[in-house]
Length: 445
Image 1 (cartoon, rainbow, N blue to C red):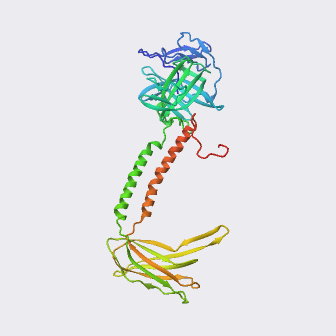
Image 2: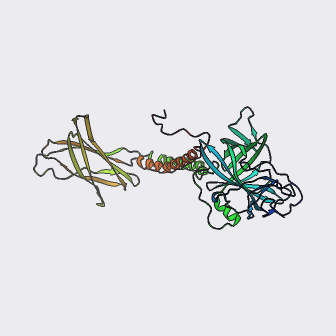
């Protein structure tokens, strides 16, 4: 946002001069003598003509509240971008949007060699503002262009409103008036904001850059803590957007690496059956069928996984098998149990089914060698016999591992992107171009 017309710049160093207010007699110190156009008495708040040796009264402004007192007292000195500046003026301004007033504060800073600079503050959000050195380019066909170009950077239109000066204090490089109104238009390219301010027929452009309150407090060596920043400001830099591109590049690179691992290690796997047999569970015996062992089979190649698949012809029934994969030479065993069950029927909601007639389990890191299975089947002895088959495969690709790895890479990227989108939606919800709601209600439609 702009803070007034460009002040005259002289080569001679301005001098500090002490005068008295013609209304109340209070001492007035002109810190920017020769460049200040108006000055406000800190005692009676009269606005005086700083160019008049007698300080002609331009306007009186009697009331002041605690809310209008500057957070940075006049006369405070601080270092901005390596240059010492002194706070010489303060202005409180207001815009009304949908009959809701929004207030912000502007501070006039002065350096006798660098001239004027401005700090603005709204709800704990600060901007370092200077007058534009060049005229920004806008499309003259529109009264309020949607974009502005300044020094090759494109700024998007954020908001246009009439700003009112509620309260002024100190010195200003223009003829300030309490109650004066300006037509202000802001364009943003975070962390910068480009503002035009029109009063009568004069238009002033300024460029501001977002700064954090803690940095302002440090620059001016102010006591305590700065006011907490509330909400998302129009040109506040997103803490997420700077990382989005890098995150998605990292996601793409790691996904390619994961895919290369899958191609290099798992896709060449033969996955051919090394054993297959069909058995019958006889449930006539009172104590069920005892365990038995299969024929031996060879697991060749390197240490890898072994997949055991069980298929059973069960309908509204179940079968449970206690397995042991045993190395014939060493006696090392891998024990596991699997159940195959399938049920179906009809109810008030229609047909239903649950379970499966096929079950698969993967035993990891099994070294090569001669193996056999010990199988102990169990089932409900009240039902008929069950036929089941067992198939063993070697070196089977485990796609689930890569799927979990892919999701582990995807979720952080999606989360950061979502937080960035939410941040931007919060930003633009305060603009003249609010985003459409994600979920529309029937009344909205």
